[in-house]
Length: 192
Image: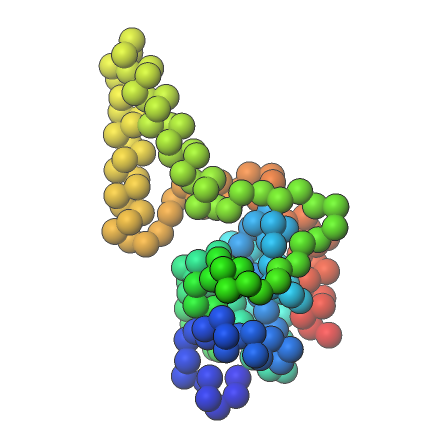
C-alpha cells in the first residue's frame, strides 16, 4: 500500500476508481454473485476460501495494494480483518459493488455464465420461505411453528452479531461454489 492508504481501512468508490489500475481487486463474494457483475479486473476468491488463498494474497499484496470487494462492504470488512491477522494489508471498498454501480461505474460479467442472486436476496428468500412454511404447516401441526421461531431467532442473532449463519449455509450450495479450476487459475494469476 502506498503511505497514504496504509492506515486506511477502506476507499470510497471515487478513490478506488481513480486507483483501479494500480490495485489488485479481490471480490470475496460467491462465484455466482461475482458472475452477476464485478469490478473490472477483479479476481474472485470467496470469503470461505480466503485462508487457502493466503500465500497468493501475500504475494499480490507485496506488489501493490489489495482492494477487497463484496456487495455492501460487510464481507470485505471481514476479509480485511482476517488478512490483517496474517500480516496482509488490504482495504475495502466502501459500499461495495452496490455503491460502485449506483455511481454509474461499469462492471464486468464473464461470458457464458449465469448470474445468481446476491447472497442477501438468497437469504431473504430462504428465511421467508422457511417462516411461511412453519406458519402454514403449523395450522395442522402446531410444532411446525418452531421452524418459524427458529428462523426469527437466527435473524435476531444475525443482526446482533453482524454475521449470517444462513448465508454460510447457502454459500455451500453448488451454484455458489467456485469450481476448483477457477480458484486454482485465480491463485496462479495472483502469484505471477
